[in-house]
Length: 261
Image (cartoon, rainbow, N blue to C red; front, side, top):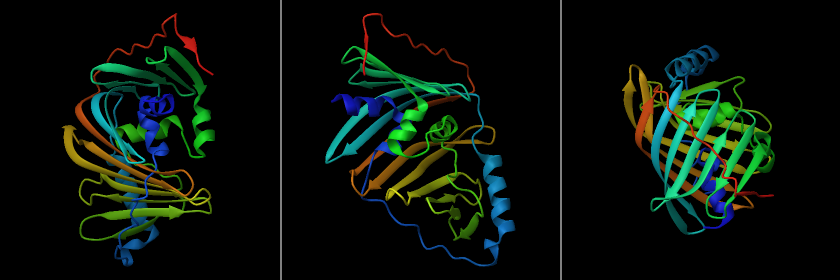
């Protein structure tokens, strides 16, 4: 595994921005009618916010399959998060730790176990590199499976028998999100960066209720396409999830490790 792919794996929660896939589908044809009024869209948006996962702690284990240029890599990850504070993870293959990462509200720390190095970067570096938002709150939303809107002005509504969608766009980006009509949980999200020709599709499957009125998606599929960089995809399957149970977060850089440039 080369150093670049190692860093992508370590920064699991950001991989959906990096992975590129040509298989992204377009939005389904949804019937529209009187319910597409601004009042209806505003009401549904409120329901979505009320029913999103709201926790202080996340402690989870997951398996990840990364596919890029015809190659597939399977990894195991442990993920811990304290809301509004820190995200921690490590990535293993065949029981051996490859990397460990810590993300705070303004910095990203990565320990590379293969090359005995570490790096420290501002969180803004990710946004500059990808030309896409990488705010801490968005990374949290991705881990929890909560919806977020790159643009939320003048939200519109559309519905069919299985789901409803909220969508909006401006000159730079557009987003369309599908929700379960009963639980208001996120089913699918389609984001388009018009300036870069980059498109992301995310599907959330296998929901279960982990606590009172708290539903968690145990399977996430990501597909991204970009005109110049190519294509890739990712599947995340959560095998163990614990909510709101405080956990220790250990991140120590060994003295013998050198800082990479």
